[in-house]
Structure formats: structure tokens, C-alpha cells
Amino acid sequence: MGSSMRKKKEKAKDFQKTKLKVGKAKAKPANFTDTSFKSKSISMGQQSLSTEAPETAAQFKHSLSLATTSRSEKTRREALANLTTQVASGSNPIGTASVLAKVLPLISDASGPVRLQLLKLMQELPGGEIRNHADRCVMYVRAGMTHLSVDISNDALSVLDWLLTVAPEETVSCPGGWVKTINSFCALMGWSVSAAKGWTAAPKAGLKAKDAESRTRQFNVLTKLVEVGLKAEASPQRNTNAYWDSIYRVPRTPHAFAYLNLFGSRRDEEAEMYEDRESRQRVFNRRFETSFAKGIEQAKKEGGTIGRAGSLLEKAMRDGMQGFEPTTAVDPQDLLDLW
Image (cartoon, rainbow, N blue to C red; front, top):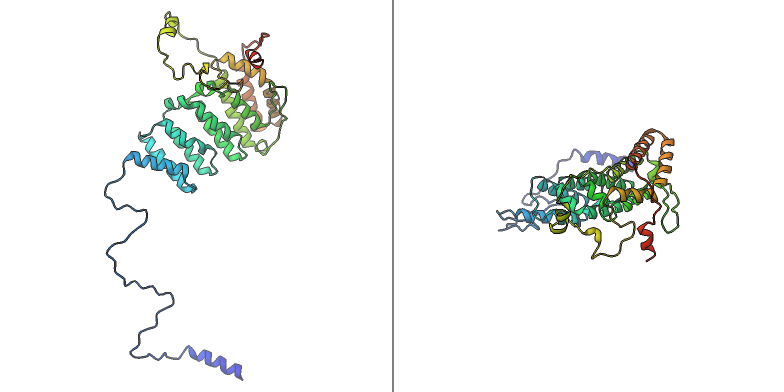
């Protein structure tokens, strides 16, 4: 009976009229917030009420700082997008060299949208100014190519593809631009390379080799590198004053005497500059041609897009090495190794 009476009382509560207490204010809810205060001013953190906008140079430097130091992926991407817009409109107050020095490490950034926006920014930079900094760009590209992340490796290949378009000759002729870059490709694709010291790197099969799309991308960019490095050089126009010009006139090319390495550390074969087709053919024949032939043969056996990409690389290598005759003379590098 007690339970029945309790249920009846609970139902009756819904129909009882609440007795109002005259002269007393309504009770305030538990989440009540007092908004009756008055203030003469409102202070907002990191907000500017100035009517004058900062200068373009200050905005550019601020965006560059955010792109390279912020821990937020969204902030870095938006800062790079802002830089891209300003560079595309012709506004670059600090110069291409300073921009590259800051943003090149982002080639190996962990965020894919950041790397994609970085490539868009680099594509807006003047190609003529990129040529003077090809060696620095290639150095960071090689670091990205050999990264453990497949996505970072593929995006680094996109940067290299862009470099081979805007500065082809400078990319393959800068210090390390030929041998070190091909070495990075061999490490990326798992091809064994015989070194001059007598050891051999065993072929490795990583996750990158199992991804057909990534593998095809690697072959395509490597084919472009071989085509640029081993293409036939155009015969220079006859100039009767060429001898005297080379002696008395100021060189028109940047770093005209870089090949002498007057103030740098002693270079080995990998870090050397190969400024002409013949020298690149010679080192390619001695160090890479056999490994390339084996890798191409394996790719053709796999068939599909990888097999077709391997055939294109084989054609580029065959055309590039056309007319090359191996010499039996002592190689200068062997003499340097005895020094």
C-alpha cells in the first residue's frame, strides 16, 4: 500500500499549482552569470585597434616566421598560403635567397598540406633566381627523398621535378647534384651500387618499392634527371674572341670559378661538380650503369606502369650514353685517392 500511495502523490505533483511567495525574488539558477557590471574599456589580448596596417615587409616577415616556427600545422599552411599570394603579386621584400633559406627545411615537414603549399610557394619564385641556389635546394631534396615516410619522399620528388624544370643545368652540375642525387635514387629504389672503396650496398626491398604508384613516380623523375644530365650539348657559336674574352672579361655566370673549390674543403667524387656531359657520362658509366640495367630489367619483368616507366628510363639512358667510349686511361679520382 505504501508504494501505491507514493506513486499517486508523485502523479499528483504535476497538477499542483505552485504557491507564490509574495515579496520575495525568484530564485536564481545555479549557472547564473551576473552581467550588470559596467566597464569603461575592454582589453583584448593580441589585438590591435590601430587604424594603420603594418607595412608589407613586416607582414611578409611575420608570415615567414609563422611558417617556419609555428607548431600548428594549420598556422604553417596558412602562413605559406599568405606568402604565396604576396610573391605571386610581385611582393618579396626580403629576396628569394632569404625565403629559400627559411622554407627549404619544410620539404621534410610532417604535414602533407604544408608540403603541398610549400611547393606552390616555390613555383611562384622567379626561376632565374632559383638557379643561383640550386645546390642548396638539391641538398634538402635529397634529405626528403631518403625519408622513412613515403609521402614525404614523394613530395620531395615533386620538388626535384620542379627544380629540373626551372634550373636543369644548375641542378645536375652543382656540387653533389649528379652523383649524390643518383645515389639517393638508388637508395630509394633499393638498387645496389658498387662503391669505389670496394664495398657493395645490398639491395633492399622497402615499403616504397611495393607501392606501384610511388615506384612509377620514382622512375619518371629519375628518367627526367638522366635526360637532363646526359642530353647532348648544343655546339657553341663560333667566337673568334673567345680566347681573349676568357682571359680579360669578367665572367657573366654566377660562381664562375666554383669548380676550382679555392676556399672549400676537399671534395670527393660524390660532391664534385660535373659541368659537362662527358664527365657525367664517365662517372655514370663507372658507378651506375650496371645497377641501372639490373633495376630496369627487374621493372620490365613486373610489367604494368612500372614496366613502361622502366622502358622510358632505359631509352633515356641509351640515348644519353650514345657516343660514349670508355677510356683505359688512369682516372683523375684514382690519383686523388692516392694523395
